[in-house]
Image (cartoon, rainbow, N blue to C red; front, side):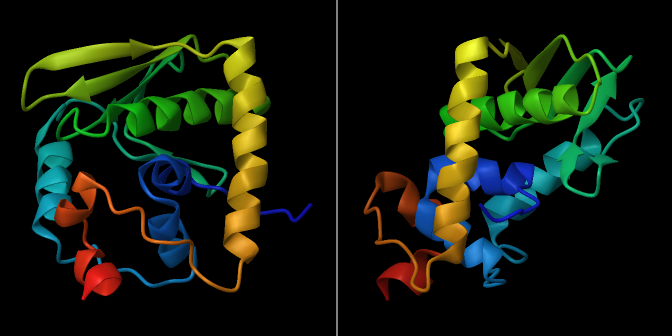
Length: 165
């Protein structure tokens, strides 16, 4: 087993697109100028102004904010890729609990649509996270990127032209 610092972004990308994950870890980053990514950053920066935001832990995971070190929050632009967002939050809870921080739950915040979703971490989730971490490590060490997933989410992806054109 290799020892990687698996970030929340990597965990999120694992669910969105494993090819995107591979690009990200190989420093092929095209998201800085993507308008969807920029809109997400703007929503994150302009929401929850009273909170201490962007809590970096062990120089690995960057949580949007944590209430009383019990409830962590992740701010998202939309629910379009909610499963990936939920697993990202579960990974944050797992990561913090592994370091002795007793996080009770997570919350996905959607300020644009004024909704929230509670996220809990079960023992079964912990087992799945450990399997996913091994899968991420396998993807990271591949010499070639995984195949194109050919999904409707590809059209809004910063890597669309890189994959299809």
